[in-house]
Length: 164
Image 1: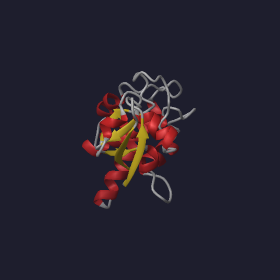
Image 2 (image 1 turned 60 degrees about the horizontal axis):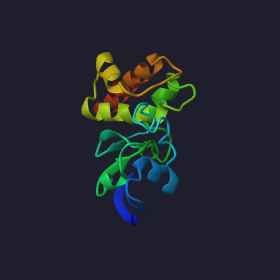
Image 3 (image 1 turned 135 degrees about the horizontal axis):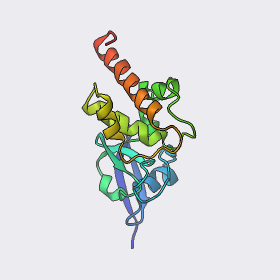
Image 4 (image 1 turned 90 degrees about the horizontal axis):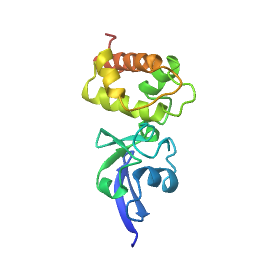
């Protein structure tokens, strides 16, 4: 089958990739665009390490044909990271020691961003529910949940100008 050009927004800029039919978004991001924070874990949608946001909704990029994001807005960990410093979620993960090997961290961060976009003040139950489906084999999840709680507070304080 013939290759096609797929255009979408990635981190605020238009990109185009030439792909064969059924090429995954994960492959296009990593292999063609150099966005390697999107991890290759199980390649079956079971671990969550490949999670990205498509129009602010978490998606498993290992299962998503890149053709399905044509004209859509894609956010990866690289595009979440500001030019200088770290995003509040990244800083909270660092401060809370919410990673060990770091393999799950990009997917967890993207899920956390989607959660905070929809619910700026989640409780512990909201956070654990949002993380369902993303596997971390190192931390036991406690530090990850705490990092998201801290980031939510910091981001909320930034919006309101004072801590909660």
